[in-house]
Length: 262
Image (cartoon, rainbow, N blue to C red; front, side, top):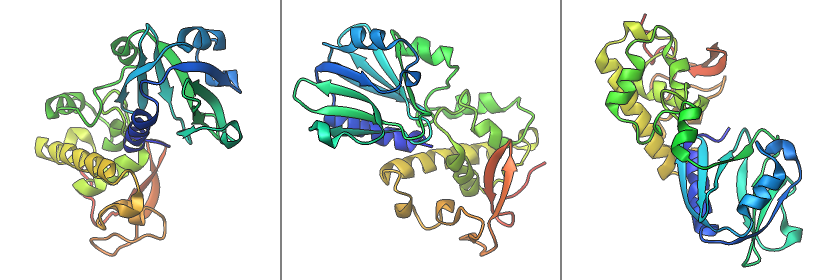
């Protein structure tokens, strides 16, 4: 699933191709991918320009020169493709914007878990969805306050978009690996310095993943992503990486490297 770094790349791609473009047509091959009526999208967006974009976690917002702001969520397999000729339309581009310059922006969505919505206020939408500040911008104080009274394992809390918007499953595993903290560590048993190590690891993982454009092969060699599989070995200890479930999510751990705090 696209997480914070992948969606940040989509934002950069969008900004470089589609900003300041006038929309002349809107096509959707499956109305189930729209949170509101297709006619509303057409009426609200055709004739408008995309003026600016903003990402909050896994949500991507595009403001226009009118009232509507477009909201995109990429689901499991969503991505954007900018192309010119109709015959180049990607097979799974179920939603397409046509621009005045003759080019198109396709919202590819193979498994159809992605969707689009419209809003008049990014702030209101963020509050409605109970999103924290984007994890990249999140302050230590806000992070600590969101965790300090929790009584549960650390990994499910990292995945809570009310705590750190944009953190998904692989990122949570990587953050805890970098912090040397076991995902089943109990928050109530952790000291402030241990929570701070998780916060610092979160920032490190985010910035590294963005710098490397979410190309996992380019991540530093001590990142779990290179060995995040059942036959993988811990970079630091050489021991086996173990796959289990924490909070109902597949989780990869180096038990000899990651300390369990309970």
